[in-house]
Image 1 (cartoon, one colour):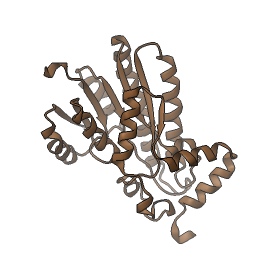
Image 2 (cartoon, rainbow, N blue to C red):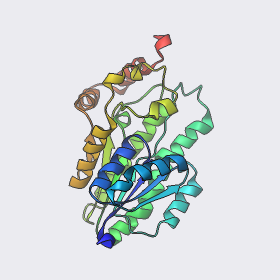
Image 3 (cartoon, helix red, strand yellow):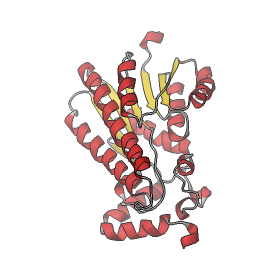
Length: 262
């Protein structure tokens, strides 16, 4: 029976939304391949999910390094039924002030690694006529985002890319779904250096990553094209669609600027 279980490959599956998705897949008896940069976090996640009775494989890779992203594809020989491109990073600050190499690393991770993994595993899925891909976008991808200009732009790419490729393979038996969370209570903001931002000062207003993961998981299994997690985020995106981009950008500038500058 074990050989009949499906396998989910999850990048960034040791923290936040990715980890909560891993729990959902394990609960539904998917074998897991979890990829992250930190072996200690991988070990902790594997130990935490061990009781689910599924096979858990961990792989240490820094997917902001294109050579490692390509090596991951070559390393995995198990058929992948579900690919979850969750790994992503941001950096907080004005574009003119941020370090170029840090921002290029974000582009490599959020965009290039997603393209590399999607192309490799999608080809295999299309050849089999079955498979699902979940790409972690963000409501940021629908909104120009001062103080996070590069991050917002990478998530706009993810959303456009997912929608376009989904259309290309619509008759293949494979579906692509984009999950668009808003501000979620994860370590993302700490790693992005956003502690001073007005946008993350109200912890109670942040979404629970387990709730976001559930929204994404259900949309993926149903084969939906995209899901915006949370009613407030749906309202924000719908309102932004009615305003000029310049107005939205100004609003986001005010919402995301450092508290001491307000």
